[in-house]
Image (cartoon, rainbow, N blue to C red):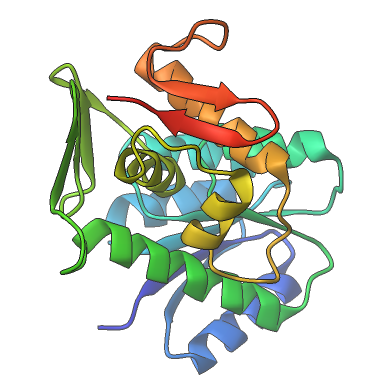
Length: 231
């Protein structure tokens, strides 16, 4: 069954253009030009990925992303006309998995969509080479169901957050660099290896785990090297 992609952009020409490129790759596309229409689509359709413009007339793409994350774990890609790092960090903090700045090359967006879907499927269903369940003390990750619990309490993680935690747990006790995480998660050379991106996701993970930056119990920073988690 073709993956179902939601495109939300009030610039009709952009939404229509992206839709053409995605449909040429055999994706099923739902186009929305307002946040209201997008929320209705999210409620009614079984989606696999959402592409959200940050600037919308009736609600920001950030707010839609927050709405999605309350119920769904599928990947979210943000479109932004701004180049400020704060916009990108805000999107990642609210649960987005990737971002792309306008103007963009449609084929690059299609490549990012494919990369996000591959990663989500791989980490959501697991592979024969990796364990279905990873246990690290009170932290339990179920690779097949994409569920995570800490001390028997469920953690609601985005696909990227889940991937980072899985990588750290699979390398328990060893330091994993930000660049290694990028290669493992995205596996795409075009993706800018910006350490701030991983830092934002780590900070969000710590908040959800009730961890502190100053004296972390779980995810520890090894300055100048990367991150590690111990048993």
